[in-house]
Amino acid sequence: MKFMCLFALAALVLAATAHPSIGQGTYNKSAFENAMDDAMKNLRVLMGSLIAEDWTKAEASAKALAGGAKTIRGLTPKASADRIGEFQARADSLAAQSARVAAAAKAHAPGDAGQGLGQIVQSCMGCHSVFRK
Ligand code: HEC
Image (tube, rainbow, N blue to C red; front, side):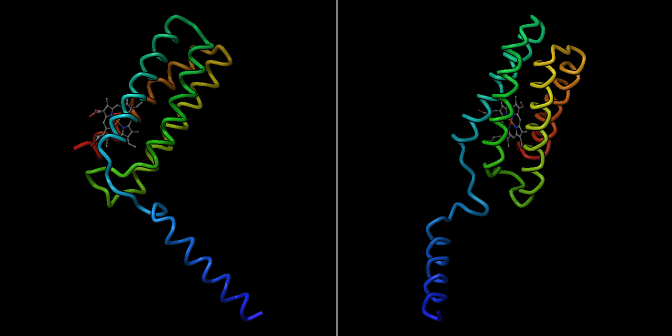
């Protein structure tokens, strides 16, 4: 029994050292560029399809934005990296607003979708004002 406990402990320690990515990572410029290019593209498609009332395309691009927000959440900003919790909360907010717009598009609800779009843009700008230096 004692042997098993030690073994389990050793396995835990090994697992922890094998995954240094758990916890705060380091700034990665190209990862940021890719994630933000995607966000910009999806936002553009979303705006265009909402204006054209192409609900299928609007829903798909809003979902893509929400998925991209999860990627953004995993990044570490160059500026104010000590405020990683706030960074992640802002990425979560982008994901939530995007999901809201996806639902509005699915329901063919232009008012809700338009309001949500405004909040998405505010999510982008809010995070930039703190973390994009
Ligand atoms: C959680 C924080 C956060 C959110 C949310 C966010 N961004 Fe960014 N964005 C950044 C940071 C930080 C940078 C600066 C990247 C760097 O330092 O390399 C950046 C840079 C950019 C750039 C410039 C990329 C480049 O190649 O230099 C664009 C374009 C961009 N963001 C678009 C968007 C759009 C569009 C949204 C919303 C749909 C968005 N971002 C949401 C944090 C965020």
